[in-house]
Length: 97
Image 1 (cartoon, one colour):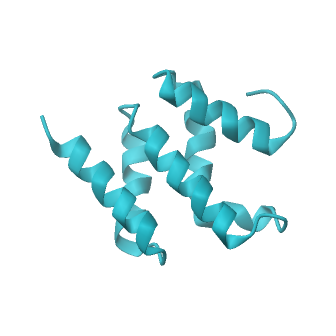
Image 2 (tube, helix red, strand yellow):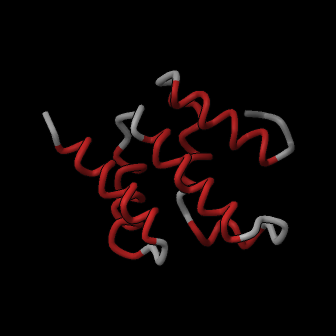
């Protein structure tokens, strides 16, 4: 998580979430914010979509209200249909007891 290279941090945050480790939560929040990718002109729209989808999947391993709130925003407002669908699956998963 302390690597200066953002893509290493992204991978670490996603991997930690799969291990149910919350230490990558701040990075996952960034990955769920489409505006964040404006800081990386080398990231094309498809790569941004892939990262958002990976972050939604990773968030499913954590019980985190901030991540849930951000994913709810994607569900209602993201322009990409696959992201809205993944956010919908996440919401359904989190609403089942």
